[in-house]
Structure formats: structure tokens, C-alpha cells
Image (spheres, rainbow, N blue to C red):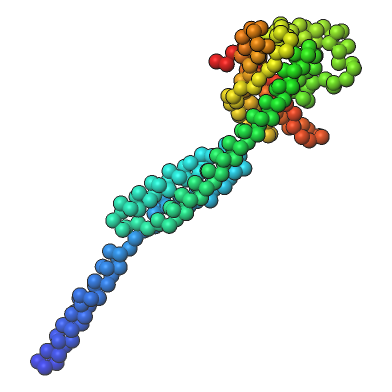
Length: 256
């Protein structure tokens, strides 16, 4: 090997090394790594919860899903904003936030409307029940404190049953001596029952709802003070024939 050939080889190796270590070639990889940004896991979770929030429309017991979606979305947006550009997913988080807010608000509005409707329905039914007691139709009023699937038919045999069956006679006697019943029966002629505020509306399984409401027995002017009491009525679904029916669960003197 002559000296010229060796020098040529060294020159080739030198150029090769320079090509490998060329600043532009290395900086492309470094720049790609530096510009890499990961998708925020929280943003993805926020979007998933936003979509899942639709299930809360079916039952309000799942209202926790949109609430959790709102919290996760806001936290994801905060993390992305403070990641120095290392995380992406702001659009996902915003979509999740919008869906959670939309479905959550829908459930809230639906609940408010349902509460108003149930309150009005329960109020009308309870006032009719109070009228039965005021008119001394105690057997009918007592039967309306029994769940629809357990009460006896409203026919001519009902009064006979309460006059002959010992257990029924005892129930009727206890009913007559109840504080609310006595207050209604002893009210002066011309007294009327006025509905007050709805205290609570609660939902149960199988489309059952309970409404607690204030009422006031108002005597004619100059014949005593108003008497306050509470009634708790429950609406249940009727099997077979369909529809709904109310019955009185509890009655309590006072509003406290």
C-alpha cells in the first residue's frame, strides 16, 4: 500500500465521519424528540366521561358521572396549560367538559320539572284525602293509607268489613284517634285545608316517588288558629292495568 492510497482512505473516512456527525443530521432527531408531546390521559378520560354522562338522563342516580366528568375536564385543562407544551388534548378535554355540562344540566332541569309536577300531583291528591276526613268518610280515607296492591275494593262490602272484622275495627279506631285525623274531624264547619310548600321529593326504584308537603287547616275567621301538619304521600306504578296511584304513608302534626 502506497502513501497516496492510505491518504485517500483517511480522507474518505474523514468525510464519512463528518457526514455522520453532521450537525443537521443529529439535530433533526434531537428536534423531533424535543417537539414530542404526549396526549393527556386526563383529557381522554374527560372525553369518555362526557360521553358516558348521557346515561344520567336515564336515571338521576348516575348524576355522579357528569359531575366527575366536569371535575376531570377542568383538571385536564389545567394540567395541559401548565405542561410547558409537553401535553396535548385540550380539545378532548373541552369536548368532555361540554358533554358533561350539557347532560348534567339536562338531568338537573329534568329533576326540577319532575319535582314540580309530582308536587302538584301529590298536592291535589292530598287535598282530596283531607276532604274525605273533613266529610267524615274515614273508611275510605283509611284505605287510602294502604298501598294500592294491598287495599280492599271500594264497594258496598267495605263498610261491612270494617264493622265485623276485629283487626279492621282496631285499625279504624287507631286511625280515628290519630292527632291529624282528630284535628281535621274537630275543625269548625267551614274550615279548609290549604297546601304549603313541598318539603321533599324523593325517587325510588320501579318509578316510585315520595312527596312530603306542608298543609294548614284554616278555620273560619274568629274561630281559632290555623293548625299545621305534614303529609307524606307515595306514588307507585300499578301492575297489570298500568298507570300510577297514590297512597298516604305518614301524617305528622307541625312543620318542624
